Amino acid sequence: MNWKRRIPPILAVVMTGIVVAGCGATLSGTGVPAEIDVRTLDTGRFPTAPPKFASRLDSVGYARLEAARLAGAVLSPHEVDAAVYSIGASAEIHTDAQTVTDFLADQTVPTLQKYGFLIGFSTGSADERVPLKKALYGTRKREGLTVTVLRFPDAAAANSAAAELDAVDSSLNPENVAVKLPKYPDAHAHWRPTVPTLGSTTPHGPYVISILADSRNTDVNHLVDVTQKYLDAEIPELDGYVATPPGKFDTLRQDPDGVLARLLQDNGVVPAPDGQGEVVYTLRGYLNYVQDQSSRFPVMSRAGVDRVAMSPTAFVFRARDDAAAAQFVKESAELGDAVDRRAVDPPDGIPNAACVQDYAAAKEAQFRCFVAYRRYAALELGGRLWETQQRAAAQYALLANSQG
Image 1: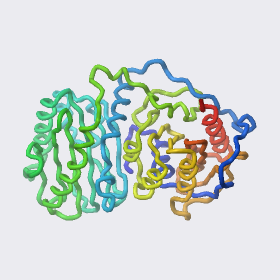
Image 2 (image 1 turned 180 degrees about the vertical axis):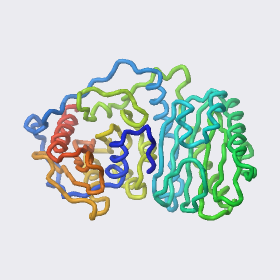
Image 3 (image 1 turned 180 degrees about the horizontal axis):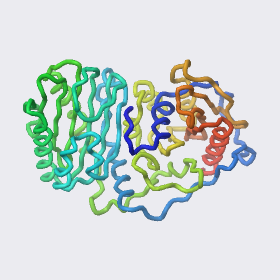
């Protein structure tokens, strides 16, 4: 996928080479293990008690929580057409107008500010590992969709913003020509007849759905069709989303389901949301960050994963039940190209743990270990095997110590 400059480098490694691509290792043991005394595990310097949370966040932190909630109502194009859009390309939450310029033209910032932009979320998928961002030029290298959902104070602001955003973007090139979306008369769209992309902005309630459709061929009817197909699926999701009122973001909790509290934090304290991590996503929200969507999404779906807690060096997945969590670890460890990895020793004493060394990963994230305890599975990564094993052992102990 295409990771933005605001994402810590190690998180980009995790998502593209570890959580996303999967890994392989030999699992130790089968069946349902008996409880072990986690005090006997080699956890090194890492804490095994549930981490502490700050009592309050700043306004940006609360906005990031609401944007993460919105991510759960924004479909990855993979969910709309898995046969075409198999690879996740980009994802980002937005809490200020400037961050949106990773996906929309820089010249749109005044429009976003003028109409009171609140939060947003961007996602994208394609049939090739090609970055999806702005339509700076027609690459003819992919079939892809990039989507940015923008939230405004009300429908009137969204309607005005949609029209102006399209007008601003269209004015940037004299070859742009207006295009109609027959099923969505309130939508605004344009393209250049010599470039196989179509940009559109569609207002719906307090939201604007901005879509960039990419293709290998300059077929405007095809571009219109794929844009409308996405809108057909996405609009019902937004209709079902219960947004937090603009003045009530500070009523949100960083860990409403108790999943982030099960995620290992090296210093025993959960940081404020940083724009990508230290939050909990639904499966749909998390899928937007996954690169190998065609392989990973079925594994997570079969396991009934409904929540994913993220940090730069660890992930916790809440599965349907104990057996599903164990199966999730097994299947995840079997994903990926065997040429790029080798199985290494898991931490001692933990049933069904799996560790792997990934030759293609950055040095600081070349080792990763999976563990599962009851309905929770976790992934830890690091640059040294012994330390990653200790992190995995501490993560397992934390999961065990978090049971009520």
